[in-house]
Image (cartoon, rainbow, N blue to C red; front, side, top):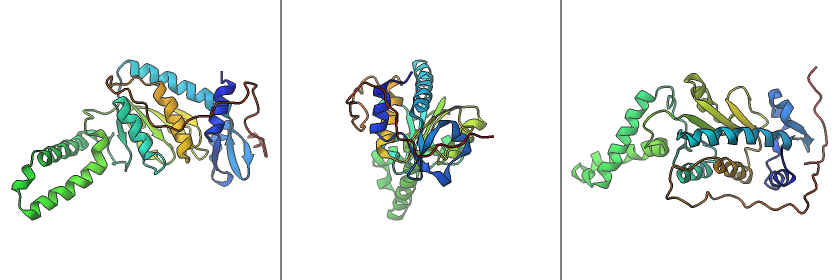
Amino acid sequence: MATATLIQSMLDNAVHIGHKREYWSPKMRDYIYGIQNGVHVFNLYKTAEKLEEVKVVLEDLSSKGKSILFVGTKVQSKDLVEAIATSTGHFYVNTKWVPGLLTNYTTIKKRIAYYNELETSLANGMLENLTKKEKAIKLNELIKLKEAYVGVKDMKRTPDVVVVVDGHYEDLALAEAKVIGITSIALLGSTGDIDKSTYFVPCNVNSIKAIAWMLGEVKSAIKSKKVEDKKPMARVETIAPKSTTPRTPIAKKEVIAPTL
C-alpha cells in the first residue's frame, strides 16, 4: 500500500504530470486522476501499485543474475539511462535504437564485434599503420559504431528483460522484445499503450526530475552485477513531507467520464 511519504515524494518530483489532454491514450483512463490546466494528472496511488509490481519483478530477475537492457533515447533520459546501466553492470541504448538489435541479434552481434575490434586497434595504435585516408575512414566508422553500440558492446546475447523510458517513444524496442518473447517494462506517459509491454508504470516521462526519481526506485530493486561499484546513480534529491497525514495528491479540476 502506498504511504503518505511515497505519495508526497512522487508529488515533489512531478511524477504525477502527464501530457496535454488532447494527446492522451484511452487505454490509460484507469490510471488518470483528472485534468488540471489542460494536462492529464496521474492517480499516484495506482502509479505506486504498478511501481511496486515492477520492483518485485526486477528484484526477482536480478537475484537470478538475469541481464537487463535499459533504453532511453530522449534527451531527458539518455544520461540517466546510461548512469543506471553502468552503475548496476547492465546494458543500455541511449542514442538511437538500431533496428534488429533484438530480433536480428545474430547479425547485429557481428557489428558489435567489429566495433570492439576497431576500438582495440585504436587503443593498440594499429590504425597508425594505415594511410591517412584509410585511418580517417576507420575513425569515422568507429564514431558511428560507438554511437550505436557503446552501451551493448559487452552484451553477448539478447537480454532477459528490457526496461524503457517512455514506451510510446521507444515503441520499436518494445515491439522487438515482444516478438522474441523478452520481458519488457515501460515507464509510460498518458499517451502510452499499456498493451505493448509486459509491465508498465504510468508516470511523467518528460521531466528529468521525474525520470530520475523513477529510475532511482527501479535501481533500488536491482542487485548490482558490479560489486566493486558502490556509488549511487545521480538522482534528484527528494523532499521529506511536512506531515504524515495522507492528503489528496492533487486538486481535481476535471474528472474523466467512465467508458460506457
